[in-house]
Image 1 (cartoon, rainbow, N blue to C red):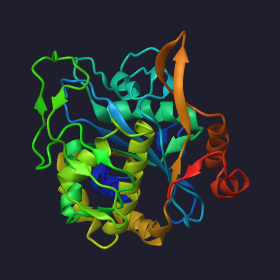
Image 2: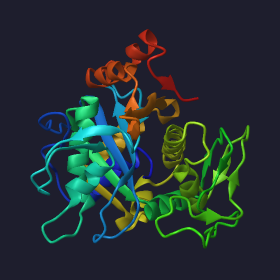
Image 3: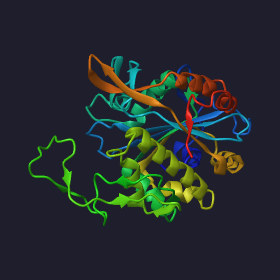
Length: 339
């Protein structure tokens, strides 16, 4: 999904003109004010599989970037794709309210009358759903990137160096980057049809330089990891932090454009020059990645998805109240800070 700092830059490039409101979250959309008032900022970052307008999109990656007032800090946290939530009804797509996994919000909101799907439309329902979970009233902008766009951005940066904090084996690729073979005894609907050699990312004390294809492969993996999707979302946030640092050394606008149609930015509307001014004032070296603890949700002995542990509610209240720093000091065990 590019780097955090690509989102505001991309908003100004893609919007084509000023917009008066953000994207509705838990309440009415807040007015987008000038970029120099140092108010809190919230961005919704979404990763999807490139499937085309004729196939329903799923939000495989959901990350919130919260910038407290004063713009001295940046906090990243993820919502697991299998988090069970109440998705509101959405008039634009005709979908009714439904209790299901949060990644379905993009699908339900994307449906158009002609039977095709629009992620740009669907992100509005996803934003409302995330807002209901987190208490965030509106998002200043949302960015949707497909897998191809992620690879293009990493390659446009000349690769990205990220620490590998655990052994990760690829479910999808061989060591040379080619697709793994599929077993002949597995049906087309088999959950894990791959066999043979696997690309492996070894635990290392020094950061590894990832090419685009390696970066995408690495951040997709959850099978075989001790905490499954919670480990995967941590790796995704690690990449966002590394990319944010890297992008400050390069031409932001050129990197945004390298993603082409693979990157869609919705909302925002502040001028590019103003957003870049914001970016320069953010100390991305001190960006904090938050691991929100969760566990499996079983109902009637059947696995339904994931749920957050009780302490996460306090963190969300701190985000909505612009007091994250003090919350982390006063409640050191409520959430985890990634190292």
